Length: 334
Image (tube, rainbow, N blue to C red; front, side):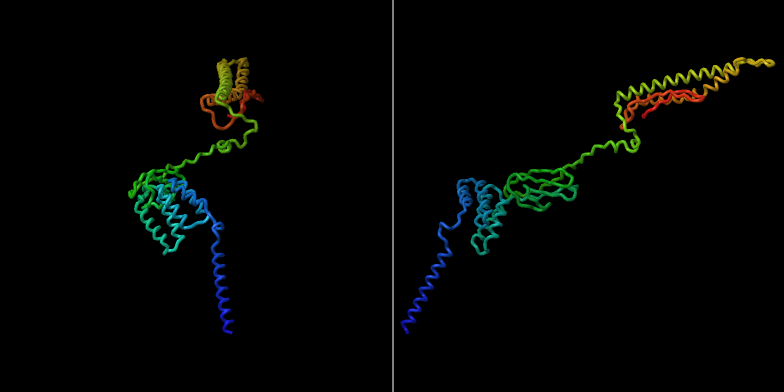
């Protein structure tokens, strides 16, 4: 019985040992099965060669595949080499988020962060007193708070001020290591909105609401020619009014100059003069009114600049006659 117990104890020990060996080999795969990161390896090689921009690009590729503290700290180192202290601190913060507090790398990263902050220049951006509301300020593309001291990279720093309905205003400030500076900036000039071109309907208004369908615009030369034609018709009509008026005056003088007859004898031209004078009264009035109207219209068309609305291309002069009157009329739009 004692021999059987020893055998069972030995068998249990062997099984435990074999199980531990199998578990160890299962947890640690062979070197050929472990994943590799060519981007990270290329980044380390470029850092050694002094190509810091290329190294940052490769480290970023590696970070995008699998974020880790080592990748973040290497990114911070290559950004620092290029003088990009703001980006270097941001990658240190990203790496600190990947390690435990008691990790030695956390202590080294924290010390490096304090060192970079001490070497960085500090910039405070202020606005002029008359700046509008809703103003945004960026330094090197990163938004900053107005009136707050902000660590920036040494060298040239671009300050861009934007506001609604204002053009962007850019100011460049060059700072040395550890330099502290305050800069006052202003917004850009107001953006003038283009005035829309007026439509024909808006410029003509209600004056065109009843215009005929066949209308053309008279240019300056055509308008002057039409003015001379209408004015000439008006002048001719006025001359006709003067002639008929002269005839009326002559007959009136003949009528009143006729000697008083004795007995049944009367002046032979008395009735004729009276009849002719009465017949010319209405035509004379029509000629005066038409002539002066046409003459005034012609003068206006010649002297006054062309209006913005359209008119008929032609004016029509029509002889007019009726019971007890005669004259001419002008039809058109002026």
